[in-house]
Length: 182
Image (cartoon, rainbow, N blue to C red; front, top):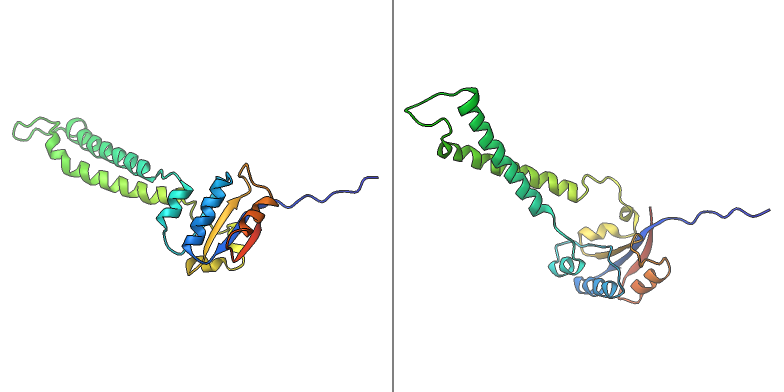
């Protein structure tokens, strides 16, 4: 009779804690040199060099542009429908489609829709609200909002190895390295 093997725990990734932004930047570069690509950095303030090194794509400008374009079309079409189709009223011999008079409302609808797209897009891209995330259970993670810097290498990365990845992070100047379960 064969003994039943217990399933291995599924790991979310490996989290390393650093004391300074320079140490975090060096760790990101070392992980990038080791061909890791699915990484996240948690810092108490924005660090442009780390963001550039992680090379995350920002889709928010495109979302805002599309929102603004939809707002402009909505504002213009609403006014055109009202003035030319639904309630045509000839005032002073002007054409029913007098686009110069539509500019103000079209502009305001562009701003309104772009702002709404920015807020909703930011929430969607940041996956908010997020009441649970595996890093919330890491020791000292609450310091990420004060004075500590964290690098997470996700287990979905094709180069992730449950033994080699923590070893790579331990060779750097880390305060701690922990494996995060789901």
